[in-house]
Length: 266
Image (cartoon, rainbow, N blue to C red; front, side, top):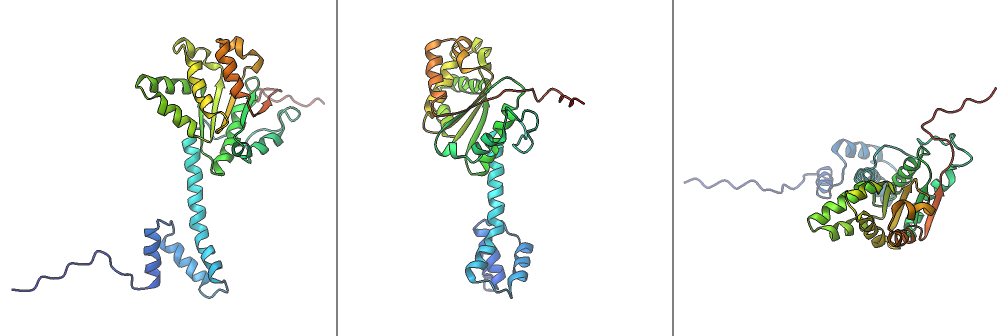
């Protein structure tokens, strides 16, 4: 009777350093393919770099690729409605009333580190949503977790969660983002016909985030008019107190970006 053949080993040992490197890269899930490795080895085999310099150079490309994927993932999960950026905003439209500097400062993400809030207040058509998205995209690139909602969509999500007895964990989820953007704040006046305690639902989220993380409010309604517009004075005042607490307020004024530009007078 012939002897059984030995089973093929499952972990074949690499026969050279190149194969070892490729195997280690796969184990570590480092995104560097064979062609990129060969190109790197050809460029630096006879170089004068030290071991630490060579290692840093070797890790640079996969590290940058991984970081870029993480940024894109944070932006995707944020749920922005458009591709708006600070660079794509028309800064020439209202140069005297809407200046670039305050938004560039917000884009550093320092307000998030300090757990401060942001409020963009002004009439429609001035680019409030555009500029907030631009700021938030920069914050995503800095590593902050961001979520965009309209007040109507936020109320809908919270109301649905309450219906299945999942309101508390859903509020906790919204409190976990380092920056929560609530757009069209005050527009939920109509939604309150279907969800009478909509203001109370919003308060749960904003109160839970107060001084723990940053909330950005975008609204057409002046703070002075909130009580009249939203109703329920006690709840509105409690909400307003938390919205304006440690808030970077930017008031928008000028010509709508949706209108054609005025031709210069001859």
